[in-house]
Image (cartoon, rainbow, N blue to C red):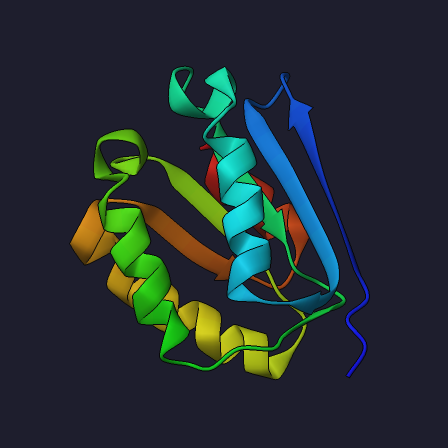
Length: 129
């Protein structure tokens, strides 16, 4: 399979959000690259901005057990992510299942509040409240 993907990270200062969009094939390594960028942003690490991760038009190409690998990595970041919010925008049934598995585990391990949404409006309402 040829891997074709694109991602972008934009800062929305008005809503105190970091908007991450990834389309195409999505691997754990891709998620890791985005997180490396988030961790270099003072908006995320010091100013408590929330994350809006838009995975519409993407397909996760890993295995379900990689959710546990990601959570293990995030456990090391607990001092930074405890109490923060991330909304996941999903339009793919496989991604939805993995996202729900992720959100059910990550909060109990790290205090990171993650919810899965199918519309940007609902995601923004939850993040901005």
